[in-house]
Image 1 (cartoon, rainbow, N blue to C red):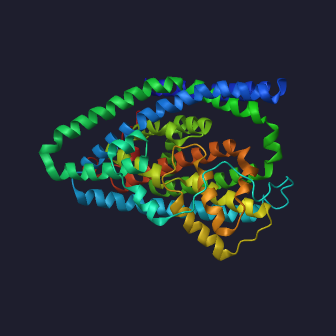
Image 2 (image 1 turned 90 degrees about the horizontal axis):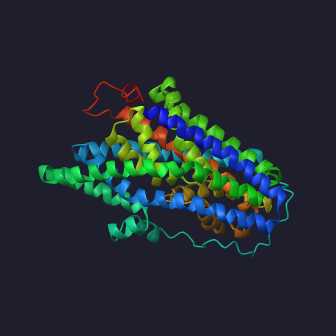
Image 3 (image 1 turned 180 degrees about the vertical axis):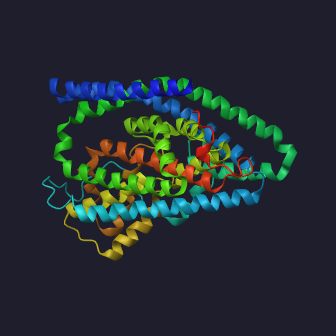
Length: 424
């Protein structure tokens, strides 16, 4: 029964995606720009409601799942080992994503002879302009108040608090069991609420796609074809690398099954351009695949802050694209420095549509690249955000499955995650 329901929702989302494209195109070619923007405004209400409902779930779900996941590990040593393996995978995946993005944009050179009028270097982008500050970055990781962090959906801060809370529950032993049971009940409640919220997903998908196509039209994809095509080619190579690395650990058949199991959160993320929108469904999909709850609840929230493979590739690809468009040649040393800078500044942006643009805006000044170059890609950023957000889903799914294989724990000493719960 769960599989039938999941397949039905996936079909509805696909139908909504196609209908959204058709509706948006019909509006774009039949009315003037002002009317198209007005239609997009009304469509955005539906998408906004869906994303607000998802945001309503995220904070309590991350807090409960991660805290319970850590508490169920049984010892601080087990938490440390799992965290070290998870962090090692994330750092490696981040380096691969950024390096592949830099390599592909240099090979394809989509910004060279772009053939579009370049915005003046002093043009305003409307984006927050803030130079990276190490002190502010580090202090922002740690919450002043868990209530403030939850109220503002600061996922990274919630993750930090949850790690401390989970380890504290391990330390106090039996005295903490009522709290663990309460948080476990909260997690089940949030997952149930997720089921209700997901009934809105096809409508949100339809509205999000229709709004974008209505305003921009399909012609914009042709104008920026080289840039968009190059980026999606780079994403395809990254998918191959990530899935290949996953296959080396959990096996080729199981990677295929993992891809099938996550198709629903993948489609939701692709259509809404928000990784956050798929978080609850990702938890369900990974547990259906066979990942133990304690691993999925631990790795996935961390991944949403530290493992944004698609977003990191985009930041590198777009930054160098803008430099190419303005005829700025970056040295190898500068590109290596950019890689390291983006490794840091890209953390904690999951779930926020177009947050990558803010990261790029903060990165460009270090290399004397005009921030106004962002105006070149704003028109097509939504279509690119769809791909990079969906790539984040793939990266986190593979990472969670791999960590579960490496750390089966006491509950499944002789089983890989792919052999459990096979009757999804």
